[in-house]
Amino acid sequence: MKKLINSPDSVIADALRGMAAAHPSLAVDLENRVISRAGGATQGKVGLVSGGGSGHEPLHGGYVGYGMLDAAAPGEVYTSPVPDQILAATKAADGGAGVLHIVKNYTGDVLNFRMAAELAEDEDVRVVSVVTNDDAAVEDSTYTAGRRGVGGTVFVEKIAGAAAEEGADLDTVARVAMHVNEVTRSFAIALHAGTVPAAGKPGFDLAENEVELGVGIHGEPGRERGAMAPVHDLIGYSLDVIHADRPISGDVLVMLNGQGGSPLIELYGAFAEAVAWIEGHGGRVARSLVGDYITSLDQEGFSITVMSLDDDLLRLWDAPVATPALRWGR
Amino acid sequence: MAFDAQTATAWITASEAAVKADEARLTSLDAAIGDGDHGANMARGLAAASTNIAERAPSTPGDVLVAAGRGIVAKTGGASGPLYGSAFRRAGKALGDAASVEAPVLGAALEAALTAIKELGGANEGDKTMVDALTPAVAAFQAVAADGGPIAAAAAAAADAAEQGLSATVPLQARKGRASYLGPRSIGHEDPGAASTTLILRALAEVTA
Image 1 (cartoon, rainbow over the protein chains, first blue to last red):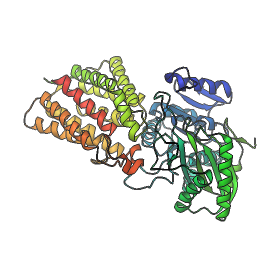
Image 2: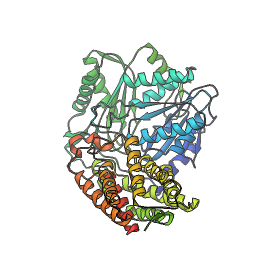
Image 3: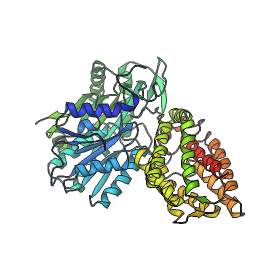
Image 4: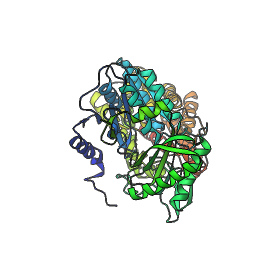
């Protein structure tokens, strides 16, 4: 397996050095592995912190900047960050108005963020945590660890970030974040598994005529295998699942996201199918993102995330943002 | 023999060696129903436990286990870091500041570790997690200890019970952690967390034998 790396052990350190060099707007703490805004925390503004395993770039470090996150804590590849690291990010984000932790619902992320929040409270930083769980592929029942936090996390970070930038207090920003999570659903299909650098081979094997349906963002297999089909059918399957879980109607925000290994030309083709499906079901795609926003290393495939828009959400989505990966209006 | 700081330290060292020796197996178990990093994460975490013990040079077995737990939490990440870290820390606290303890107290410490894991992770027996290895192991340890048996015999019984608990995870469908997303497809595999728990308990039996 050929990879653009020096060694599996240096992947994250090398990437962080590169991010620091590429983006003067970021302060990158190589020792603690914390990415924060170069100007430091904004006094009086609620701080936003997220983090998780690495390998999902640009999530989360690429979303640090005006209008989104104040700090991010990248863990090892596909492994949540550790409590001390999240604490360091929390302190870097604290402008005196408290800090919101945006946590994807994966057991490791939830546990490490919970321990970090306790450490932060010990240091008199008020922390409220919002756990995202927008994955429509997983049944939320007592028989699973609950729905996974996936693509909707990007929307939560953008919209909660805009609310914080407007001066909303911590409880309000948390409510906005939870609301975004509630009105958002995602579904993903993989054609070929990503390769964790330390493992050196794909996380699972798929035959030429197979796809993994309902895959998560850590290369973990989905719930079932299906037959490879034209993108029209794969998008239709995905939107059927989302629609059955939370009906798609009215104005929606859609993210057609690549998993890191599918070319943009394919993602645009997939997006065209998604727009046709949604319009055919009486909805309207009012805003969209097409590209790699929450990846799984070099995994081939897509995820699609649909959020119901109202006036408030639309205003917050359109609000200025200036991060390495999302930038408009400023 | 009693369980003192030296034995506690030897336990962590032996656990680190056992996990390192079996890193590839843990990783492949995790690749089957998780994301394939359990071996690397446990090796990193237990190495950090050893480093933290060496730096702090604790003089009681309780402090050794607390230092191990802190090292694990600080470096492991994932779910294993908080779960194993809290388990060792809580076990260490249960030992108090005694210079050495006998089987019943060590049994109570192992039970405290099990309680910590269940509280933090929310898992119960049958969910296909490390709890399925640790629960029968604690019961077996305490049964031997209650009969006045020495630590060596209790630890050997605990390791045997953990191995049986590990085998019993094979037909289970996972209900916690990342494997739960597979639903019925998680059936037919050993749980990697139960496998690492078994290695750690076997290491305890070896250093107390």
